[in-house]
Length: 154
Image (cartoon, rainbow, N blue to C red; front, side, top):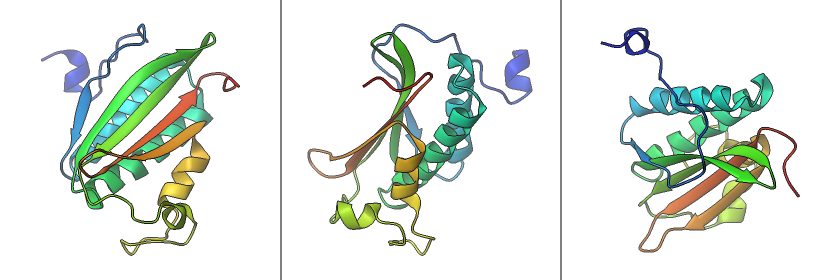
């Protein structure tokens, strides 16, 4: 067993040229810590810095949980992206659930369908540089977030 695997860490290659992102499954609660570790490892490899890293991992944790709880499970795509010479991390959370019937309401603080505090989507939106929510053809939702290593490009 490789040493990194024995310590429970994830070996992450250095940030690569942008390209197609592999999809990581989100099927149960046991997948959530793996999502957080994967996002944290890539954020560190890209040099996001502690504050941006923590914000991105927090947003990813919330969005992964939403994918599981409200979307019935799904996948996360993680990719290193560039724009105008700036590097960042893009995360896409894809589910095939019932969708979000009232997006404006779902983004408002205090709104919850799961008995939580109601800061999930709106809170995640505040933690990242870019945030979009799109319906998935055939049902479901795709939430995409980007955090830039430097000041976000215009």
